[in-house]
Image 1 (cartoon, rainbow, N blue to C red):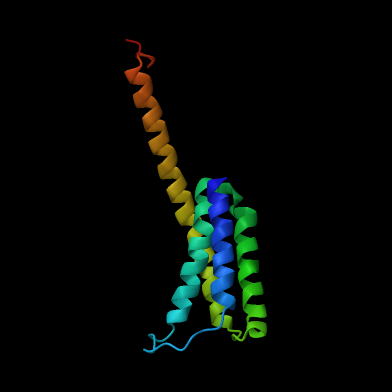
Image 2 (image 1 turned 90 degrees about the vertical axis):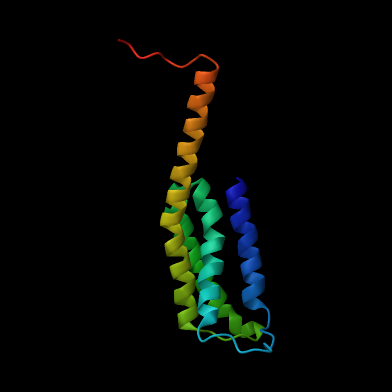
Length: 131
């Protein structure tokens, strides 16, 4: 539940950042820096929820990609511009987060099982191997 809550909170933060007007930067950012920002926002948005429940990628990834499409489509109504490359960066952030979330979840499960085995051994409940 915490992972899903974090993903929802990050989706709201993403919406605010993508819909607020862009201030003039005192220094011009590197070319295509905004694509990295879009990728990172959507990667970070999806990762917490899928790290806890990676099997939900089947519906969560398309939902997040759709969210990215909607964000790009409505940006012109908030003084921002529509950009196909931003939409692609959003989608790639989601797609790249899926295998990372599976990996994070697998490591978390391994550590949890190791802690449980250690606790069982310490409490003397570990099964002794038969000779």
